[in-house]
Length: 227
Image (cartoon, rainbow, N blue to C red; front, top):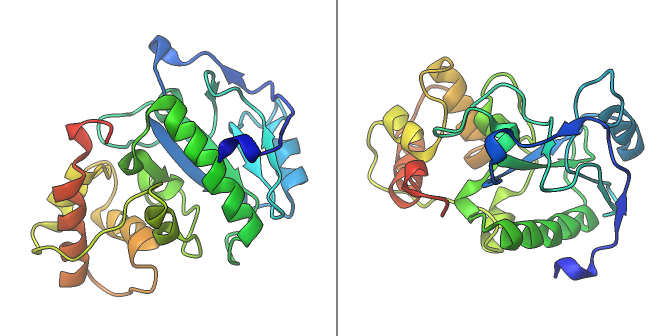
């Protein structure tokens, strides 16, 4: 699947060694929030910007590698997932050219799926270790946003998707799944969860939120390993 991808390489100077020789065990998905993939690549390659990512995928499906997977890209910034605080050292970051306000085109999604399948096989990253930028940085980041099709990735075995369980303590379960509960306001954790799993939902915490989070935490507790 990944072998069919034609990947262009334009190495960014914004990269370095992974701290403590860490092995990547997370995959973080972003959107660029810029007018074009080329504009995003220019920014991610600008030393003054001090940001980068391993890959950028344009709307037509073209893939550009900016940082080798074995190296540390500067895509995640401050945030946490489970016990991982230096997400940059433990992850591979993929940027999707999208302003965040429109659906992700089919060619782009197909390339993303192929790229992810190869990355996850190479580094033994399980579907539960695939997250959005908003998951690890609630309130600070909203990408890949409510228009991103997480359920599609789950159907392809590239992410996870919940069924309703028996509702429990939403925030305790959110921490078990990986959200940085305690680092940010509880309302921001709920917002991040809904961005990914219930983007149509509004209002205060509901039983439906708690039921889905209970299933996520029960099946994929973050500290159980890289499943």
